[in-house]
Image 1 (tube, one colour):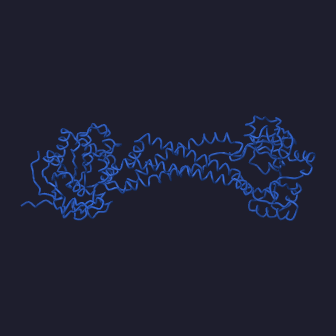
Image 2: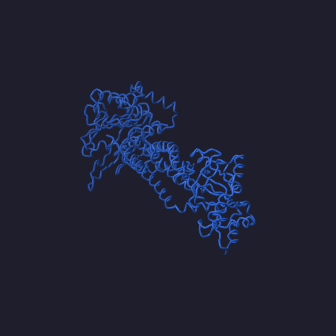
Length: 235
Length: 385
């Protein structure tokens, strides 16, 4: 019998609420689940269900009220702000709905941005960026500014930026939400390839069922409660 | 390197706003530099004072004279090297607006006391020989187009009448801190005329100028002079040249203080303007700072982006302001040369310009930086979306 692989993400008894004036609104209630290494998980749910909040907590850009989140063996709920920043830089790649590129930097410079925090030499950084841009098929656009790129191209730059440091997990919040159907399909294909061919762990939040079909595992979040995982065959 | 690139490009993202802010800083630094130069000009006489020169005057007031006979007694005091004397003449050249300081002095001792007035030897000799001769600074000679040998007439105010003088020497300052607008002539010429016209004013001097052998003897000599004439009809008050000149500045201290306050207000106003610019830019870019934080950039890096941008904008305005200060000072000097013979941008003013710019840049970035480093990433990203 093969030994079971350690999950890369372990979430236990997670609670998160927001304060709105005098009211405390619970968003996540006692969430516990695991994500296996190399998994492509789609988190679905209606607006306000807490899926983006859950993603932010796993990615270390928001703090839980209680519970633990262990990613790659590190309990990130115990890290302080500076430790968390260093941990994110080394372990998480981010893909956002609105690409969130820095407008004053070229595609090349945007992708190089996370490498600025590493100890790679300039030549090594250049090599990494060029290789990553080749992977997302944007070598010919590396000197273009975000405003000179289409939405799909900008999202591919964002993906290149997310993977250039070779992070343990990729988190994607509605990565196709701002794209037309063709561009969205390209982005989802690319993410699927990253998962299938390069073994990247991807956690994607989406409310688009077509996008979710590209994932291997599907989970629904509703009113702060996470449903069981549904393995599926990606498209 | 990438951080520098971002902050530099950020600084020029909104060119109109950045341009106007830089223009504001330029004008503020220019105004600050001009006002500081004005204050320095006020103190130029004090700064040019020598530690080995003393001024003796009547203890009642400068308006009361002293007997010329005091000179010989002062010369006997140990530590005294040179004794000169003179009177404020207060003559007017053609019309009152052509003001320049004019004195009757004992020429040999006076020039010996002021080696910073550089006079060619032949002109010096010609000045000594001609009782009606006068020497004048290069600036007023150029201003009025006088030439050596020209006769210049001054209208006396203290000593009535038309007084004719012949230009025998043109002096230059040893450095650019020396007043080149003085006009001085033979005290004997004045005294002889006064003997005939107003005998009671004859053989009286307005002040003594005393050169001491070394600066550390100045206090002792000053006390000795005043002690010598204590209980006489004309008691003396002796002070260092610096203290004497400071006494004049003290009369107008309120104006100087007002100018200094205005110069500081200018900096405070521009501080508010730059702070407003930085607050606006940071508010617009809060999402971008959140992205950088998401990618792992720390507080220090975010702060250096904002402080750096503030510094780039302020430094450009400061440099432009400093560059414009020189021509502006030249223009103002041309217009006010009668009142401020030494009007130049001091190194200290440049240092204050740079320090003011640095303070403005730092202060303007404090609040925006606080906001940017404190904002929760999730909240910042929502604003970006």
